[in-house]
Length: 140
Image (cartoon, rainbow, N blue to C red; front, side, top):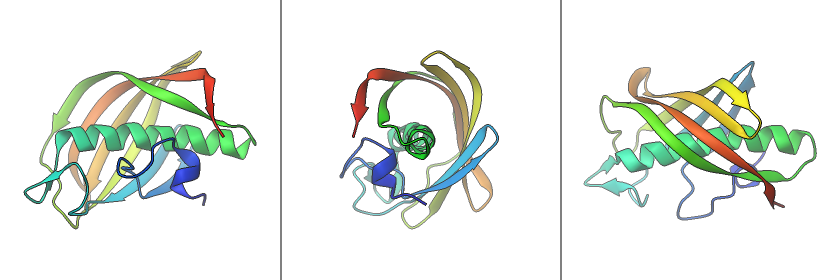
């Protein structure tokens, strides 16, 4: 598996994915361990903003993996919208978040995803997200 930094454009301290776990059909999985020093941790809890950024980077890692496997540069992506965000609870420091990203629809450079975040098989958050890929901006 590639280093996460080869798959996403973000760099420390904003990297919110530890590992890309792969793709199967239209779904991909990623993992993040919540650490005390994470910029989105307050009072031992990972914030909603951190979860949204983690979901976006999980989707970006999928795109990065696809482009890298074709020998192409990884494109930059931008969050267009976040819809139907449901937060069941915030993850705590030390917990591992496993996120599944499902591709709902892809049209040109726009991708609609559905994401689910779990800790120990407990769903902690979910949402739909619209992501725009910038075909002109490439990360080498």
